[in-house]
Length: 526
Image (cartoon, rainbow, N blue to C red; front, side, top):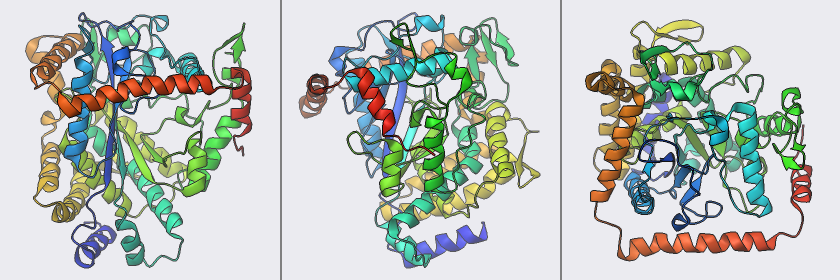
């Protein structure tokens, strides 16, 4: 074990209560494209039976009108999170008629950008802003890239952990500052070592040629309609997907909350010449919210984000400035095609223990070289993580992925033992052991299994994913249907969300132009 991490774990285990690491809050956001039975992207409006995507607590949309996003509340137990995610799937499948949910992160059978419908949120100013923002993303990065789907894991450490950890560390900081500094250390370490998540849970080693269109790439041909990388883990997280070069010159510091907020605010206020060429309002129609480096905070892509629950109308940066970091959002989990809801309890449990490791591990500030090293490890693992000859760079020196991963997982397992002590049983240790086995058996990782099934069946990515999509719909159709109190719970939320949208629309007092001007006038700039 790393000596500092070992001492911290031992101190927490010996001096803290049994449940010191137990009961952290866990929530999931999971995206899925609605597709027709033939696998083509659905062009129908968001089903009204699911409620309003503008105001529903559980079912919204992401970039496209055809891209559902399922959102669970944050629970103390992974089984509660997974149960709710399963119920949301059941409720939705029963209202999608013949449509399917695409069950992989990478989309397929894509036509041109103009055929991908933007998500619509009604006529309110905030609803229009959401759609214009997405229109801007389409102009800036292309609509196809925005249809890539993922699983976001939201996590906050147990509330009782913080005062005890602060006491163990003998910190003299204010409680909020100590917590924020610790979370930012976690964020930096996740950037350093999050390649492990791509290796273990990456599930996008192949793509449809229809997604690539005529774009330049150096992928290999799997068959006539599929491209792939033989040792890829997550092409979604490579330069082919979200980790592209469009935001390469943005320098958003992760060394403190104040620097993070300042740099994000600066990017929102700084004009960008290539976006000025797009135009903001052209012939009376908005193409984007602004011509600045970022339209809003959420445009900045990172595999991990420090966050705080915002008050009504409060911007994410303002929330962080007000109260510091409250939780982290992990954005690098692919949709797991082998699980009907796209993520498993084992994945959540391992990730939770790994996040504690990232928090307890020493986390020096990033400089340009160390950040570049972390980014290189991330992108190269996405493309080549299962290659036996692949090497990570650690403090300027080459190291095998397996050696570094085993070192990390040893510490993560010790943390899992402490969590299990509070939870009862050994579920967290089992979750870590299951992932540990993949370090020595890369052929058992989800990315390798996908390619093996495609080879075995003699199919490309589209045929494989469509078969799985049909199978997942069949799985949910065979479950006992939601009824009684649970069915009423989701039906009530759907109906009330539609009413909330009407209330939001009727409350507007100014034009959209004035609303947007006010919104940006309140943005603190560098």
